[in-house]
Length: 383
Image 1 (cartoon, rainbow, N blue to C red):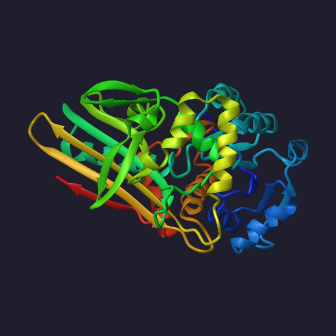
Image 2 (cartoon, helix red, strand yellow):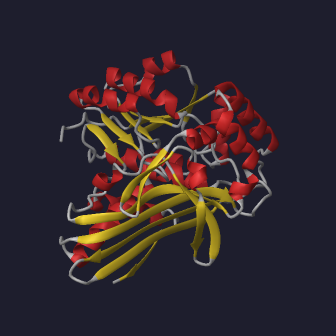
Image 3 (cartoon, rainbow, N blue to C red):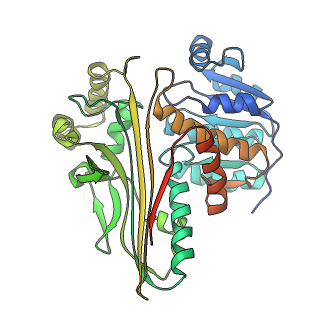
């Protein structure tokens, strides 16, 4: 591991949208200085006031050239902007020798910039939100526990991880937008890879692989999301385990697939222009209002049958409803991200790429923080 440049104690939080939540309070408490950059200082100030943080952070109108002038060596830049804008911000961080953090998946552009970041001592924290993020913590701890109970011998493993932001009270659309509709639609257009019955599978249209999923007596629908298979290695599955099932996916309310039939019809045949128009239409027809309450459900489960006859099964569950002052999604995205930033400031994050904690030891530290902040993380296991 390469040593990272010492943190300065200054944090630049870029964006003040739907996922900006209590994590910002944590940073106002722990950082020497916090600057919130948004489309306008009025927007930044309004979000701070909503979180009870008025006057706790400096506000700026987001302008990349102005940001470049203020970003100093050892600062931490937290990008809450759309994923397509992360790579430019990371390149700026490398130029200024500032650390970078976001909650999004690692993109090819981010990956391409990592060697340069490592050379100059810049930490690049990614996948540090809810999903990806908290799901990684749960997986790291489940794998560690299974290995401790069953040993390192051969066996058959089944792993599932499903996460969804849904309306707390079901609506006709069976959904509540917790991020930009255009991003939601583009995620559905991306093929997914997973393992079922021991065989790698590809779903070109992930929603067509939707199936029923029961959770503690409640009916949901789930479908595979993105490329699950590389996470087998990231979660430190022993080579001796034969992977029968491995899927990371999205959870929706029962009836979602039927309610979205018209949306899927456009996704099957529409070009970028038509899909962008659909996103605008969905935003207008299904706005998020101050009276809405969201619900976050995350379940991560692992079952291992050892060849010597023993078996172990474990499951982490997070089920949380938002409040009038803050959505569940904002809490569950911003709090783990903020803790990751405090890890950078404490010198516990090496230079180069990091996806959430990436170790059971680190996962325990992150999870202790999250439960202390009121995020309910429940472990159930059968041996």
